[in-house]
Length: 232
Image (cartoon, rainbow, N blue to C red):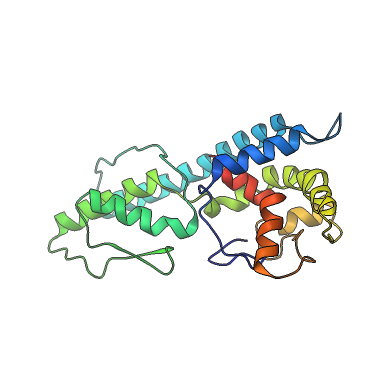
């Protein structure tokens, strides 16, 4: 799974960077498949809609648990009910939260640990009222900018079948046409068990590890997780 460095050894990027261009490439590749391909843009759209529905339901459950914790801590207090504004990458979460909290009046909150943790050490909170208001602001920002990767186990059964078909129908033929060797794709059960983990199937594993070769292959033949993460 992608982190600051991906499982394939290529530097990670925000899933929103170049989203439109990657999505356009994928739609074009899918449109050019055989007369009756297993893959279709409609399948991708259905997968994305179902994936986001399940992820948002899991996020809602998580938010409700945090709300219960805050009310146990502070009493029956009103809390904001903010919808998701944008799903963010794991390494984008802390910078996004820090900006949100700064806009809410807490510029001392900093991003730490490559964007995956918030550092409150520079913030000066002097009384319980300020601590309560900080808790509410953090709750609000977290509600608005969740990380889909936190709910990967919930969406695995939705994403994995599409990703398996897409890898077989699109990525493998694309890489072979470009002259790259491709390892055997595992069956759906094995593929799904490791999907979105460090052990997930890597279609680029046999390609030269020269960074420019890897980047070119990934750009020309986008992997399933890149596609799913690139479409807002």
